[in-house]
Length: 133
Ligand code: THU
Image 1 (cartoon, rainbow, N blue to C red):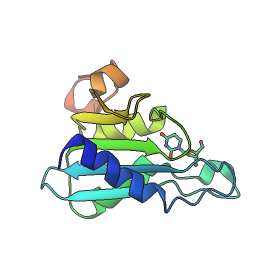
Image 2: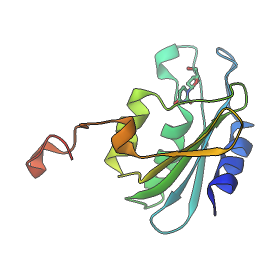
Image 3: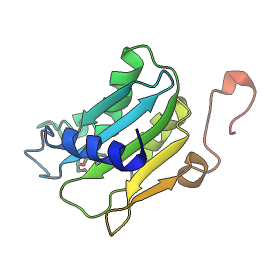
Image 4: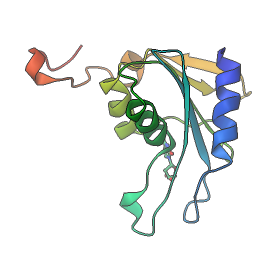
């Protein structure tokens, strides 16, 4: 699946967003190391901090299905021209070594970023003897 198709898959997932509070529909789609595709949409909550981001749902879906590494992850909003993943989701991506983060540029074309660009000096498992990669 190419980046344009992955963005389209994320866009379709965003249709299922549950967003009574922000009305900001976000969708994510990722390709796991196995090659399988997983999707997520944001799921809000009356207790606002209990909200789940679209990326968190997609990553949870992938990991709970047996994936331990992620190749590409696309994130898109139906209500914003460009959306960048929040800091917590960048850290979640770090845990599973997301190689490529795909977003839409202002014209709607795919734009690819590395995690090193999005989360430089990231914290990784301290038990492996390093605080960053
Ligand atoms: N949101 C995401 O789903 N992903 C992000 O990376 C940024 C924010 C959601 C959370 C909340 O439902 C809404 O966007 C507004 O913050």
